[in-house]
Image 1 (cartoon, rainbow, N blue to C red):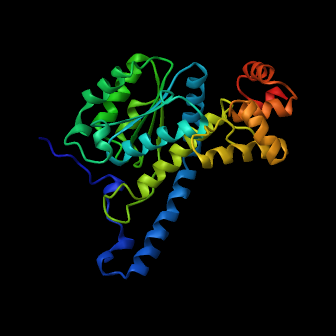
Image 2: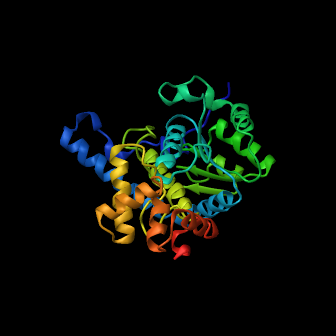
Image 3: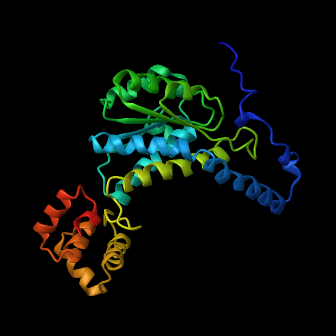
Length: 298
């Protein structure tokens, strides 16, 4: 097996600021880790123009009926799966609309699957099984920027005609060469050498937050700064739903509760019913005509 050259990767370099880590007090280690973490948001800020391009491509995919598909291995894959899963309750979308793929499948969420990330063929196969098409958006995530599983998936996506983006934590990353819209965020060496679940993972989470949230804003899933397509799947979310109706329309709790029930617990529909003084069916038609944007119904 050929030697893998890691010496030029920022994510693999030793952090001079944390030499002697094993001799620090708990307080000193916490302070040092916090100092390192503060560098992450600054590093992400430098990549906002690249992140914007990925978001615009994702919105375009959604408007064509396409999906957002994250793929990665290890921590990167887990973060993609997490972000995808959280889109369902937050934005009321079907699980198929935002998908997270991790090398090695579901079991790799908790246990490392030997060799899965080293298979480019596996990345292509996973997308093939999803019936990837030209309307979809694929975002490959790899802190190192060189994961074969991700590269294989990106190459397959390009063959199919899907849009492609990447998130890596090294400059001049290999995966960037395989995508239309690469993001390369350099957070500096890790607090603990090579442990990319730390600063790199935090950077990836921040970027994934941007991609999913702002893309959903772009297709009408948000009114003002309220998540009006939230699914009321438990008691807390039922009460949050009513509060959102109150905040969006300035009605009292009893009115919000009444319209929430009348709208079959559809928050967005209840809001449009109140704001446009419409019955449920008329409000539903207004939303369809407005492509789901509450403000366009007013």
